[in-house]
Length: 60
Image (cartoon, rainbow, N blue to C red; front, side, top):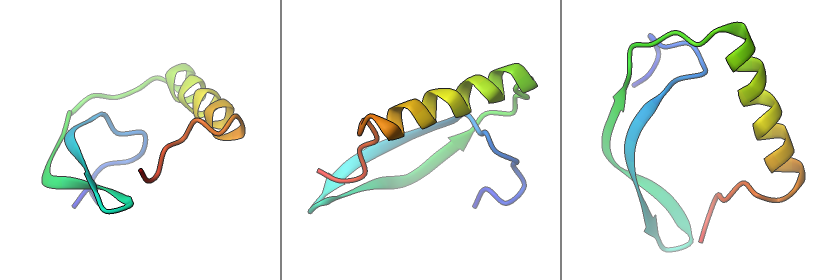
């Protein structure tokens, strides 16, 4: 679905709890913007910090 986009990608999507998973309603809207290398680095640092501190939620 997002093969033409290179990460990071800014998306608009609805996330819905389903059982013990998080799913999308199927409507995913990528925004056509380009992030600078500094922004990409900041995103990576933010993600790694959240991951190391158990802040990434993958199920309910």
